Image (cartoon, rainbow, N blue to C red; front, side, top):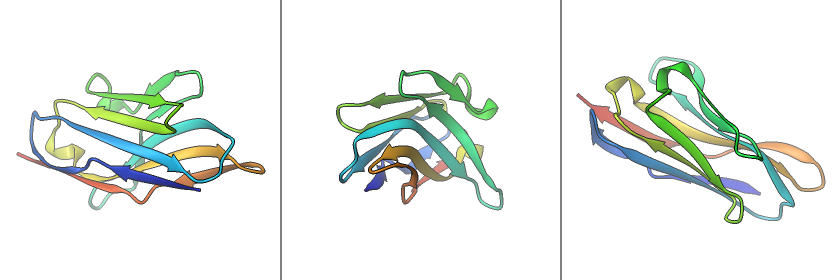
Length: 117
């Protein structure tokens, strides 16, 4: 079982990006899915989380600008990022609780987002 993130890149301030993260392998179910980020010189922080029934929560820094969504049939979580700021620069990681024989937490490999001023 693994998570594969994609969609990062270089964008100017005020622009948009959409990140995707696909779960693959032999799993039975997906519960919580989330995005975290690590900015240069800072610790990792929660960006957004969505539970199995679609309830969303966001970090204060991204509220009103980012939207998390999921497609359960595709095992995919998305992060739509609008009105990007230079301080949004960092490596974005997806995270999910997946059930195989038991529930386990998995991390994707990270995708780099760079916002230029």
